[in-house]
Length: 359
Image (cartoon, rainbow, N blue to C red; front, top):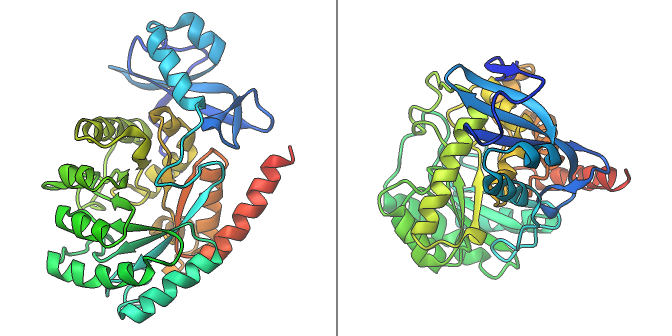
């Protein structure tokens, strides 16, 4: 069951929009009046999520009604502009269509593909195969962040990621470094990575300054706790709102450090310090995160929540669930999907986008 039991559903907002903490979730429909993030998904109305001392409540309104009743019309206008405004290119990648980020873990212990790409030649071959299959980004990680994973030394991480970065530098796609650590960010971008993908939201020692100094695009993810502890009974009031607030704060910190907003993407962190119910809420409320005004990256591929909601399948048997979750996010305008199965995702995206264009 989705993490919605905390929500009180009302016919009208408890207070004027933005008089109390307020978020807007566009309700996507075919051929709507407004385009979400200037992209392919459209909407007519929004759910107004509000928080007061009693908890969270939600009601439904048009944008005209929000502007007519908002306590802070400037804030309401800014939010609406962020929901509807076309996104500029990120890391040199056009966001007019969804982009596939292929996962290349060069680790012995990642939850799904650990040990498959340990040798540099295998890693480079796997990266090239994903590019051929349709990946617009290759995300290279040298430290497992699966639940319960132990950290590795910086030298170990560098030894794992630098050879495939070098081998794929001229492969014709954007490379991403999946790391939490400032030194790795600096060395990896010098070796060819154009994106820093940090599951820790650039909170590590020196990470913000290091990322800013590289000039690379960044993907800021939410994680409650650490990989060692994150799945030990995670708790939220209402997960999408609290994760939104965290990401909003991290975007502000990144901008203060000198990272331009148009080079920032966010990832709500499906599976990182969340129960299956929290994860379902995140997918159901994906459209709300467009209010941050930056691209949305979603990584649901082969996650354990799929098995817990289905029949307990092993990681390499979760393709159907991975595609279902990813397409639900894309239908809400998510621009970036991080996946293990590139060819299958490309086919699913082709059908999803054709369906949306035909209505």
